[in-house]
Length: 249
Image 1 (cartoon, rainbow, N blue to C red):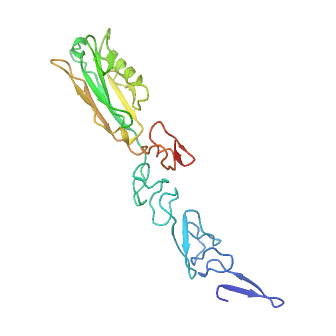
Image 2: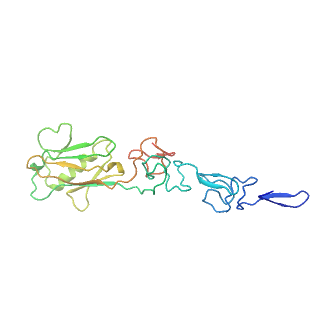
Image 3: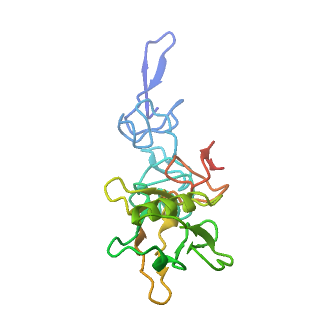
C-alpha cells in the first residue's frame, strides 16, 4: 500500500517511512521531511503547540495563539490573547517585547538653597496600579489628603532629596521605588518595573517657591498583565504578582 514498505514473505513485514510525505501506520503526521520544529517531528509525531492535518503530505500550523508556545507563523505567545505582557498582540503576530522599567527623576535645586521656599511644593506620582499619590513638602500648615513629606531641619538640597525618597518608599502598596542618585545626591531616581508606570510626573510650587525639577516616568515595557491572566514568564505580570503555573497570581 502507499506509504508502506514490505519485506519478507512468510509473512511479509510492512513498515512506514517517516518523511516520505505520506501519513501511514502509527505516524501522527508526515510533512515530507524529518526536520524538528516545523510541527511534525523527525519521528512523525505532532509537536507541542502545533496541529497537523492531511496525509499526503501533512500540513502543520500553530494550534492556538495564547497557549504559550510560539509555533507556525506566530512571532510571540505569552499564554494569553490580551495586549499585555511580552506578546502585545491578540493574534500572536507581533515581535516579542523585552521588559524594561519605567524611570523618572525628582531633583531638588541647589542654587540659593532656602528650605522655606520648598514648603507646600507638591509632586504627583502614578504607578498605574493604585491611585495616583500627591506628595507635599511640609514645614507648616495642613497637607490635607496629600502624603506628608516633612522636611523640617533639612540642612541642604541633598537632605531634602533623601527625605523625599524615604517618603515615597514609605507608602504601602505603592510600586514606584525611590533612591538617591549615586552621583547627584540632590536627585531622587524613580523606578517601576512595568509599562503601567509610564505616567508623567507633575510638580507644583505655590507663590514664589523654588520648583522641584521632574522628568519621566517613561520607558516601561511589559510586566503589565493583571491577576488570573495567562503568562509565560517573569516579564508578563504586573508588579505585585508573579507568574505561577502559567497564571499571574
